[in-house]
Length: 90
Image 1 (cartoon, rainbow, N blue to C red):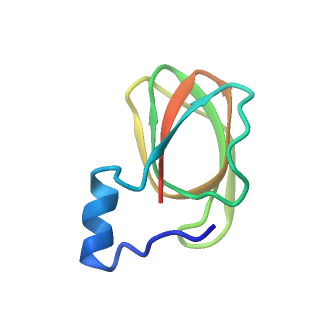
Image 2: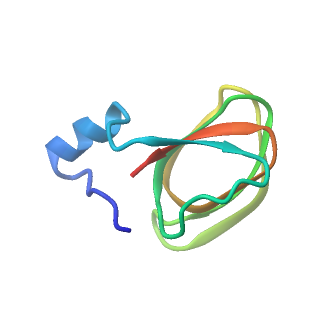
C-alpha cells in the first residue's frame, strides 16, 4: 500500500487531521503489511520498534517514549514491546 504525498496541499490537509485513518496499536498486535504511518502518538509509556522511511530506511529498535509523546515521519513495520499508541495512516 502506498502513501499520500503530503507535498500536495489537499493530502497535507487530510493527513493533518487524521482523515486517512488510524490504528490503535497494542503489544503483540500485527498491523497490515505494507501500511505506512505519518504520526505515532504514545498513549502511555511505550517501547516501540519501527522502520523510518523518511530519508532512507532506518530501523529503530526498542525506543522508549513517554506518554503523550508524538513522533512525526513516515513509518512502517511498527510494533510495540510495551504500552499502547495511535498510528495515523499515511
